[in-house]
Length: 255
Image 1 (tube, helix red, strand yellow):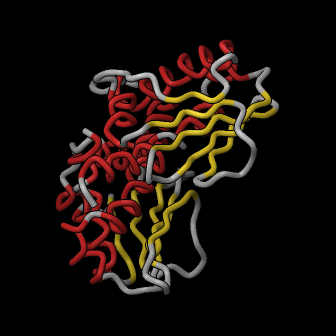
Image 2 (tube, helix red, strand yellow):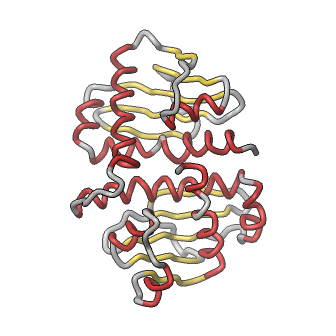
């Protein structure tokens, strides 16, 4: 699969769903969507469809159509969709429901909150509470993106093929999360999601939120952290090693 197609899938399956988390814990986002009862859909020619469903002040992301969309953004190419996400240019897509101006303007404001947590706070001194929020957003993107790359990046095929079907890696952040899992199914496809799966094949554990935060920001000395017990691996180490290789490539696409 070519680069534009991979980036588009990352934007739809790893970046866009983070909005559901932001609506949960960000007051500005909650104020924007508090009266919404609507579904917004995103897709491009030949690619997947993702929906964000808003109801009663909450948001839920669906990686396939789950309801009739009130507003649909459809792009003729993956590149045009990517340009919208990167902010490098905006070509008006085909919009079904364009007359719903309030909802369109509201979503544009909501997307600013996504950029705030994923980019605008980089390099700033953060409170413990804000650190946890940024960590949850960034680690969500990284974990969900790893499943996309394992499935569709031809350069990583030797790594994804090396992974054992049916195996699960749990990513644990002590003491209270956020936690995630990565799985290669018995059919050979890849899944990633929130929470922990029972009886994982391997577990990657971070002793504190700060240690995990250093990881997602690229400032963690993994060897030193492992030596000090701040990072712990148990189970099938090869699965964690393979997942680490894939995670290291996420920034190549979403920097």
